Image (cartoon, rainbow, N blue to C red):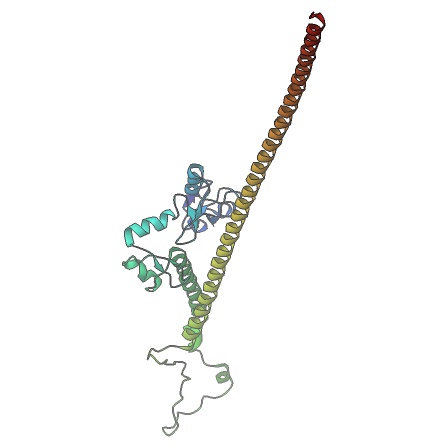
Length: 305
């Protein structure tokens, strides 16, 4: 039997045991699962449990810092400006965004090519396109599994040709009379209003497929709503952080002004005290000068004839 190497551990395994996309063995698939990037939401091979962003976003974080939500798709991947790179490129190539038929956000671009055929002609954004394709793939797999099970349940031709057990113990009846009505087989074919013929099994499979698609779409919508709520919470936390920073800066400026006013008041008091001391000294000098002039006048009066 031919063996093929795992792209991660390089050990050799049968081709059936390797994954179709990444050619990974079972242990490597468990150790390095495919996860979605926290920022751009693209799938990548996780190297470690702490690695939650892809290599491209990790490089952009080093260059531009933490991204902001895109103004179109609301994905946290706007490293430069207000739009992510995916929406920027799509807008340049296909024009302004349009409302998505699934999430109702204005983040779908009309590519006007065969890409819409893959989603039944719907105008979907990037995230909803991925979700819709996953729904179709799961429905196909489920339908294939149901088809295989029904095929395995068919009776074998050899066994179907055998006589029923009752014929072993009873004599075969005579030839059927021409007057006897022919045996009618039960009909399972049902015709819907559009004229297409559907069997009972097909209708069951179709109903099951529709239910699977509906449940998956609801799960995708729930995940999308959870993501929006998480982004809103992140916005609120960011605003709270900025408000806290503004309060701290205001408190710091207020402390600076108060300290400056205290220093100015202290310096003013010291200046006033120094001036008062100089005034007292000058008053003493004036007083002493006044006493000297009085003494001279009295001396002149006594010595005069």
